[in-house]
Image 1 (tube, one colour):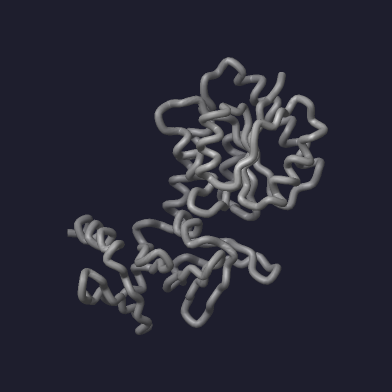
Image 2 (cartoon, rainbow, N blue to C red):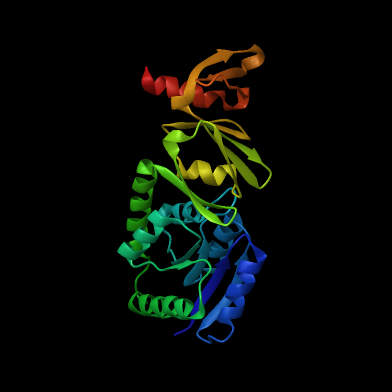
Length: 257
């Protein structure tokens, strides 16, 4: 049985490592590589692979976003081996639903286990038009994101845990994000969009392309000219909300009225 395989990761060295690891596996035929989620969606729909090695933390579209869009419309969905650095909740969900994952950095033994798992699943599902476990996983991931109460990331070689309730606001800085948490500031190699996807939409609001705020830390929105707002926090920090994001405030007010 030959498994048509796609690699998706925004880091070139990670793609190269997977490509090298697969070169001695004749039953895994590489049909392409993608550097972001949008490329992945196009390639999956075009190539219809049996298996995808899918990075979770990618800019704009995360691995979860890719899966969510693939699940729309009832089209066949490939089996997924997720690649992640430290998403603790996701690891638990993968184990429950028997969709495999590779925790970076992984060794050859763990990689071989994932391949054997993929072979077994694809063999069992050869005549199945879609992967039913993926839909169950996405439901659990969505539920988990609603109740996630902390962020986990690497900083200066350490794994740092930050409770989301302690975050005042977040600001993008190139490929990094600054988390302002009271008197502490964390500098994370992550995109603002990726962190936003991990936070509750009920508690965190995007103010601009580069700013995300914890609504529990907001004292008031002060209207300015041309539809902009000045956002005053409880600690007297002032942020700006651009008019292009004003609809989010209006939707929040409509929900609470």
